Image (cartoon, rainbow, N blue to C red; front, side):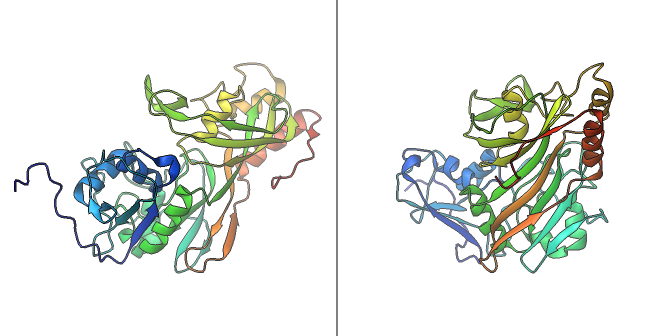
Length: 350
């Protein structure tokens, strides 16, 4: 029989690490590569399609094409090669081994399975166009050499990410089994992510924002609500304190889309202060002391305050928190001193 068009024989699936799940009712008729990509949040959709083509993804034990339509109840198995390393795919240079570099890292927690970092604003999480070196990933493999062999080479150990301008808590896995388990928890929305932000204007009441998010066709660096290939996204936000020109808010992300909090808050008419991409991020002129404080912001006033999930090693529920950084605290202090503020009786855990 001709082998033309037949996917290659998959590698050994007796690998130490794997991710297995069942196709849900809501996924009836969806493509295999799309279903798999949603369970692998740190892998792009095009990358996942290449995994399917290479045989690293099986449906009911069989190799299928990326566009194969799935049915509820079918089992999907994603397995790494036998050496425990994720397949090498991607753009030229994307998967080149990273160089360990002494990037300063504020470690909130470490154990044999994972490490939790308090990422400062301005630090890029992993290499990308224009940011090959001095990333958080470079610092991770300098401090924890074993992480270099966990996950894709360009994103060692990473199970989620924060934008360059966002500060706060970030989790990385130290073993491949831990990475796959955490990736599945993120994909199945079993991770609680809470942020703090300053938004422009009076935010008002607690609200839930359920608008799909996709890439802006006019600017590939931006995202927007709705549009072609938009993916479901849900954000919950509530006021904590009213301040001059702004509101200090709590945010809970129920999904993990790129720029999600920034896009959703801007969609409500309350862009995050300091966010020039989705602004206006501050009044151009005037506003007194408060306006001057906002114009001094050099990044979006967005902070990943807490993350909670089941520990991949022990199974126990764990929660990690990162304090507000100095630049955020200084802006809050300047706004509070600019006029009388009104505290809203809601706690960050509301």
